[in-house]
Length: 170
Ligand code: FEO
Image 1 (cartoon, rainbow, N blue to C red):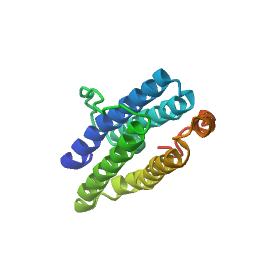
Image 2 (tube, protein in one colour; image 1 turned 120 degrees about the vertical axis):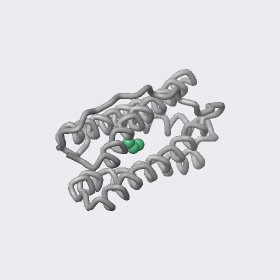
Image 3 (cartoon, helix red, strand yellow; image 1 turned 45 degrees about the horizontal axis):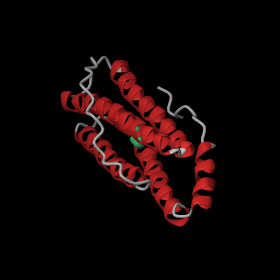
Image 4 (cartoon, rainbow, N blue to C red; image 1 turned 135 degrees about the horizontal axis):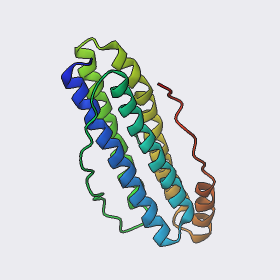
């Protein structure tokens, strides 16, 4: 059994990860509407990864004898009025998720819950990669996104992203 506060935060994170998937699906739909199928592909895969994250939290709770409670998922609320908007909102969102992971880590640390800390280590590293990917995308868009020919090339690059399952196995 886990400390109730730690278990509650882990359960809340299930919802946050599903919300992330929902948000990125919204970004993918926006780009699809705009004819940028590569950007849409990038965010569809991102959404898939977020669902994986949610499932990892569910599995971890269940492996520790905890009940999982699924709550309603909020409607994605990012205002998407230009090609750069999802990219900026994505980076901000990942920074927020990093703060959530750190808050769970803090609570686990306070309880000397080393098992949960070890489980979260993968997410701490993953958040570093998520923030870097989001930031790199903004940099690339700033460099290449304002000219139609190079935007086409960037979209083609993003179309090549393929899904790979998370490296964390519980
Ligand atoms: Fe679940 Fe994008 O971190």
